[in-house]
Length: 141
Length: 176
Image 1 (tube, each protein chain N blue to C red):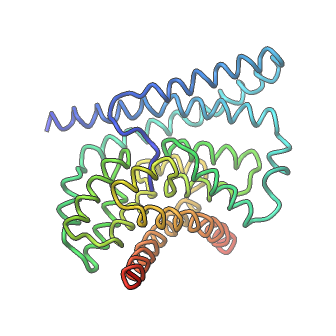
Image 2: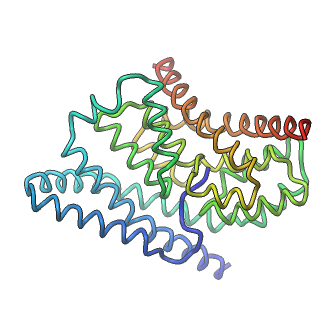
Image 3: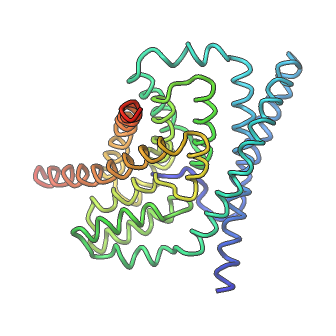
């Protein structure tokens, strides 16, 4: 049991040390972007159409790389900066379900057809989940 | 559901390099507009105050999950099983699985060679989107209602993805 605790603690510390600089970096970048483009974030790239917002979010999340924790921090800060919940939800869902960077590994391990269809399905479902989640939240009130 | 993390368990240089590059970028911006950097740093400090306590909780939870769950346990319940038990095992296994996705690809490859259904592999990978140890951070930023609604849809869509992948496989086999 002691060995198991040691192993688990080591794994957690390594994970922490890998993620911490990325979180710090993302928070620094987010702070700078918000300071640079406060109005553009609210009225520029996002906010024209819910489906397009979700599509942009899903695309960014699908090609982004990093620990899922980073997507929550980034998504949360983007939301506070005025980016729509549709875009943010699609971003955090596709961040953890779609993986362009992992595609070669998935193809090699699980097969080309499986990997491509699965990622495509995940990409589309990220948009659907974003729309449904916000719709449900409106229903709940 | 794939976490885009490193494959190994060693501390990666990439993440630290990323931080160094961001700091370098800050340096460049400071040369052009110091006021902007001060404004951004103030915002960063406020964000850090909010995020750090939640991060601590998250890593305690990650430690607990690492301690309790091993790939061998998932393999035991996913092996040759199908039916409702297999679906449930794939769903729960995916939710509880932690760490980089690559070792799980290896496990799924092994299981598929032993007869695991395509649908179960898809469900397992999709349900990894539900990150139990990270829930405090999600709740912190988006609230409990949003978190519950999102988790509900993630679970629902992980099942849909399994059904869809099974259908795609079935149609493809019919064509071949």
